[in-house]
Length: 296
Length: 323
Image (tube, rainbow over all chains, first blue to last red; front, side):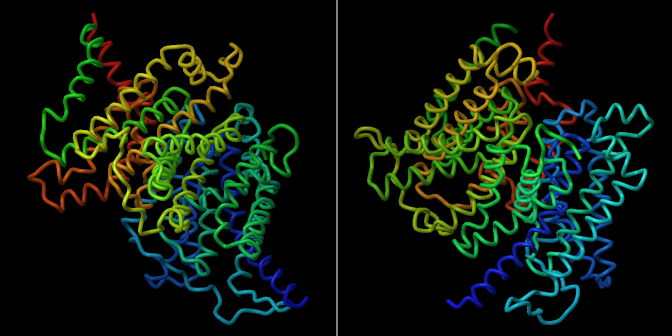
């Protein structure tokens, strides 16, 4: 094979990897935010990804213009996430992580089944955000929607970083995740911050599900698979660290796409599990985590 | 009250053993055999969830692993049934060990996510590894179980075989919970830090319980394959793992009887249309299409309202009734 085509092929794999990696990053951010606030893994995170895509599709079929449908689906999913916390997580007064995990497992089944009854068993696709042929880059093709994926992920990360660093709300969230009782002592409503973390995590997951829905079809059952991948990404970077979650997402996406490209597409879905077990075994604090377990 | 409590396990054992004498309905016996298969999985899950406080979302995958392993051993390799049965258990144990060692070394509930990933991957692999598993079409032509020269082909024989193995597993698990490992598990469930401080090898206990539960699931899979004679990948999904988990959660923590009752009840619901003659096909279909909703909802409700499950409620009733 010629050198030029080999480079183009590699570039194509990298583009594909960074595309799915950006979506994993959004889902991973959701895991990280809820873990920071509660110390528990939210097994419903993947379902928020699914709900984002599915409600977006539903709103567009009702004739809602696409930008409004995207914003509406994100907000609706955020409300569902916050409501889920209020109904199912807040009553666990002890904050026992095992019980929170069990509740989110049960909740994820309920959300998935509700989506099945509401939207039906079929796979659905969202219209691309901007129509038109793919762009060419050094012999590789970049779909327009891929640019949207990157742009929206980058925007979400920047907005999140500004909110966490600059606003009172963000500082309260960080304080809660560092030490809940201390945060309460300085007058922060810690339980409200937990609700907010579920809402925010749901919004980020929904955004991931929406931007990728035009490229890969979505259906009621896509949540749990995406949950595993997003969690693998979060723990690869270092659970509880938002920057690391994004890095972990991009690395996982690249590993998957290079495995699919150079080994066999069949092995693609095994990558996340291998990464998950490998990181837990070798470096549980993640690639970017320091010694011990840090939060945020 | 106390004598009833002490005699109950023996009475249940006698009724279960007498099953084939009480009915000659072949279909009912088959359904009750399926109840036994689920009970075998639930004995392991009850130890894992109810005693060691760990969550698995991948036990259907271990059942699948065992089913395909025994099918391959008996059909492709032509090995005696018992060899395939042991191979199925060993393979599931090995799979359990690979998942448990990295996940359980750490504090927290990483095992739940690792098993979910394993369950997702396994249900893909069962479809994709067509040369071994037969792909979507499934694996057919699996012979009945046979030990020595005796072939278990009558529904009653299959029923006794499955329930005998369930009986052995229940005895084993009862002993385990009554002795030192059981105390260690309860200590672990109460407070991991406290257990650690009292010299309990918490990681070792958790890993061993998980491997045991995976082995029982693998054995149940091997039995399933040879009882039905056909294995389809659609049975071993994460949805089925959630069903198993729901049985263990609803059954309650710190008990074997509770989860076994829950497993029996929830398995019978799946055959509603066949068991209740008067019920219309549509009613049964609607009940069954909402089954998973009910499982998910009951996990949430049990965790929120009755964290010790059915067995906890029964105990509370029992202590109210006692003088």
